[in-house]
Amino acid sequence: MKEILVSLDRYLFHIINGVLICRPLDYVMPTITDFHKISLVRFVLLPAIILFWIWKRRGEALRVILVLGIVAGITDIIAHRIIKPLVGRLRPPLSGIPVIVRAPYGGKLSFPSNHAANMFAAAAVLSAAYPSLTPFFYSAAVIVSYSRVYVGVHYPLDVIGGAVLGSLIAFIAIRAARKTGVFKPARS
Image 1: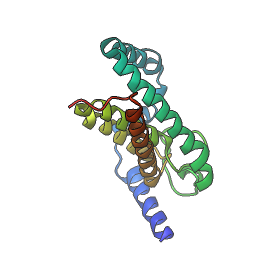
Image 2 (image 1 turned 90 degrees about the vertical axis):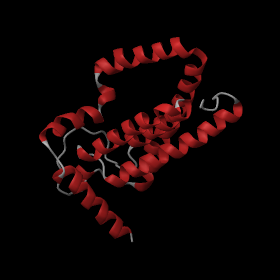
Image 3 (image 1 turned 180 degrees about the vertical axis):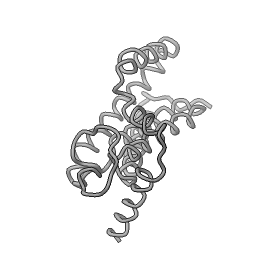
Image 4 (image 1 turned 45 degrees about the horizontal axis):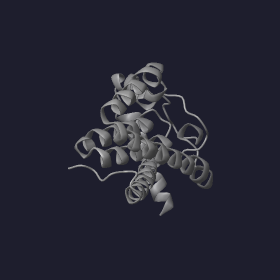
């Protein structure tokens, strides 16, 4: 069964990374995959959005930011420090298969994708706080996750595993935060 799953995963990787490609996406996907590393985004846009959010929503925004920070930290630690070393799966460029690498990557290990785990964790938390924006949050998570396969640094199962991990941790954290009163139930 494991061999079939690995074969299917590599086949889907080949389709996304080498067949369903186009020149514009070759430039867009590396930007999407590392959007958070762009200086303008990191040092200007994101702080401006957060400050505006806090200014408009005060305590509500601070509570959501607190839950987001905790969830992202836990998700990142579990994915990077615990699961990746246990699984030990090498990234596609290091596994001896044909791959087109379109973006730099850190580390040798691939499963689960931290990008996918963090994006789905954030999407879950933000969707719980602002349900009307759920399609936007999850679309962003899916696009970033897909970009990781497109640029050649993760297999499809890596991003699926990351999505499941991030969603599960967020679900547990949201329930705990609601029980303690830190996180108010989503408004209708």
